[in-house]
Image 1: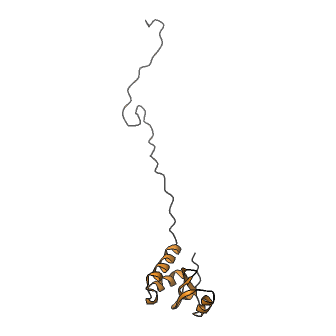
Image 2: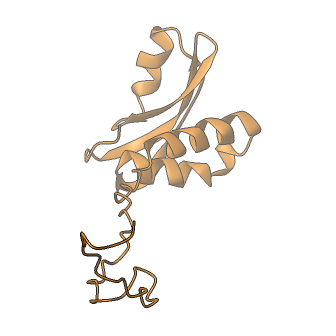
Image 3: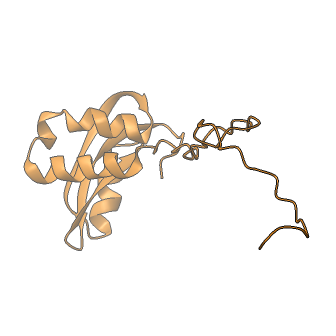
Length: 125
């Protein structure tokens, strides 16, 4: 989840065999990470205060992060934290209802005329 906070330092570090993107406002964050057991700590000063997403995009292009592990870690962070476009609900296509015309079938073919049947007691059957 990205935030609107701004950071001046960004990089990666490895903790328990897993690399993660790290953000800070002071390069001295290296000491805290090292004390906490992080390895392969690589942080870079950014030229301006940036959001996490912008900072990740900047370090993606830096020479210090050009190796495959760093590129994969940063790219994964960007992909996971890029806002997803909300899918608009699919509109159900509705067949337009055409009013029935007198004497017409739904396909527009004239219906055959029917004879009015009247029971007649004088009929032979």
